[in-house]
Amino acid sequence: MKVMTIVGARPQFIKASVLSMVLAEDDTIEELLVNTGQHYDWNMASVFFTELGLREPFINLAIGSGPHGRQTGEMLVALEPVIEANAPDAVLVYGDTNSTLAGALAAAKLHVPIAHVEAGLRSFNKRMPEEINRILTDHCSQWLFAPTATARDNLLREGIAEEQVFQVGDIMLDVALTFGERAVRASNILERLQLTPGDYVLATIHRAENTDDAVRLSSLLAALERVAESMPVVLPLHPRTRTAIGRMPNGEALLKRLNIVEPLGFLDMLLLEKKAAVIATDSGGVQKEAFFHQVPCVTLRDETEWVELVELGWNRLVDPKDAKAVAASIRDAVGTSGVRSNPYGDGCTARSIKQVLLRAAQ
Image (cartoon, rainbow, N blue to C red; front, side):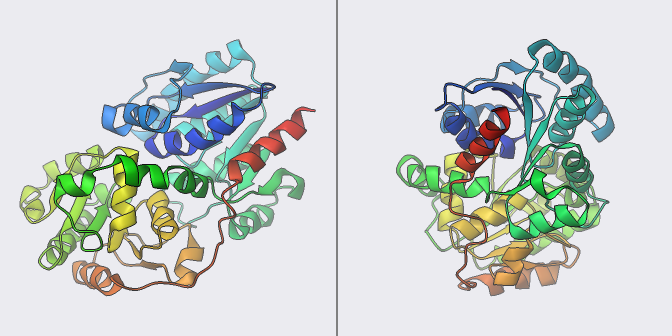
């Protein structure tokens, strides 16, 4: 079976690392890894190939950044001849980025079956580009790998045939189990940043809904500044966020109390997550990683796809436009915990996906 895996963004490199490792164990599967180049800085892309043992891509399309329509269109144009020339039995995509949508659309137009990892997630907010990407990808796909019962139910309610939906658990749990101890051994990030375990806040801000809205971004930075008066706040600064701050007249002033660092390698980020007192983020992946490490999380958004974490008490939503509320939520989350539960499977998601694909190839 020939599988073409299409990735392009930091979270997808991470997810692909464990599934590609498992696919490589079977000599009946040939995987061709295609990198669209959606994330192209070394510390947003290449470092993950090095740290996670992900082999170099079969081809790098080097699309780069740009407005959603142009970026997705350029990916479509570039992917079509690659898929045609290599004739895969399946195209595999992850998550909800423009690379995901472009890969799914290109494959669908060429009548190549699509496997979607992280299918069925819904924020029910169609102003989010990610929501549009994931809905369209799901409805193009042949195999929909849902991480949770909620995601599975979402797909069935939308009329997708039950035999196409597979509740396999969350691939990021596989990643956390595979690389968690390696991070403890290999990373010295706490020493480099002079941090005490359990005595700092880790924050990430990167979603367009926060970075492209000056009111929301100012509010979030002001909230982190308030928290930093009593506890160190580490903010790895995404390129999109840095650009947005640069456009704000008071942007740099809002960073003065924060521990600003460049985007980190995966092992450094994993260790920072494991040892934080609380994590404040607008990232879906980081919300789950916080849960895997049993660290309380504050989500800097109006909604989350990972509703299980809110229901279990590990995660709380807060209005990004209310700096006072954001700061209070972060402080209040320190030292809390939620219900002990395991909605994301047993850490064997990659093997479950491989078995589904192999059965389909028979």
